[in-house]
Image (cartoon, rainbow, N blue to C red; front, side, top):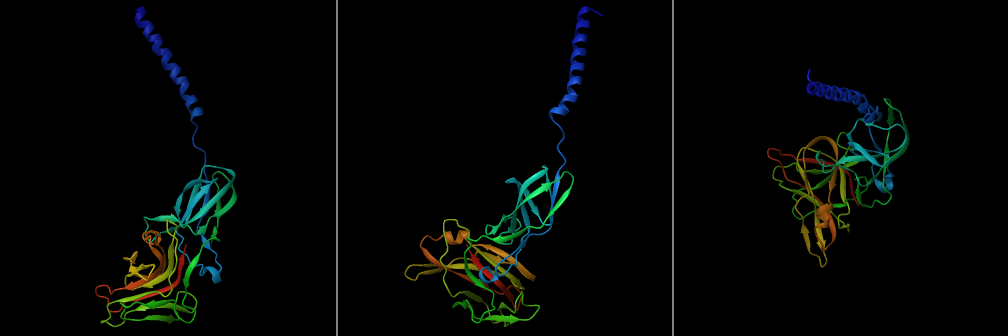
Length: 295
């Protein structure tokens, strides 16, 4: 072997063994990720004071989980949440809902106060949390209707050609003794529409305004608002949402924030409900209960 070739071989050998020696050290610099701890959350419950806040019925579908105020992730319930931490940590769980009943618009509900706890996390072990949330004390319940009291807080509009009803007894009552019914039992009826008797001053500028309700129906129905201005002018705003049929009692959170903020001259608002028979449905029936207008 010539001196030149020998020198090249020597350099190659030095480079190879130097690289080989460095490979184990990479594992020290970049160790494998730690073993996660796990948090099990099956459901999130809601506690209310019925007199001031109405029913504790809810449709909390998701947990927004934070550890030490850092978002770990959003998980559909029931959920097993992996956390790459151990020891004592602050765990915060926000109750998540489907805004307007749409899966693509999942949000932490802005009126439910987060659940917080200091939890001891153990690698490769599961702790189970049972979060319970409450409405923020600053939540304003502008209007509640559970249909239990005599009289209505709703009235028919001049467009309606049928009546507002009460129902009693299972399976048509959601809870308590009475639920509301928007019924169109006769084929000549073409429109049911009612609105709140009272007008409500609601905040603008993006402050969250929501309408909650329980419902079941064999026909689509719509929800919207009338905006009222100084001097008596009033305008019916196109529907905020069209709610699909549901054979079983359901719960929905309707976002009215944009509609309310859209009208700078409005001084207050009415909420309305409307039913037009779907094709082929001779007897639309819409049952409602536990309506809450909150901000």
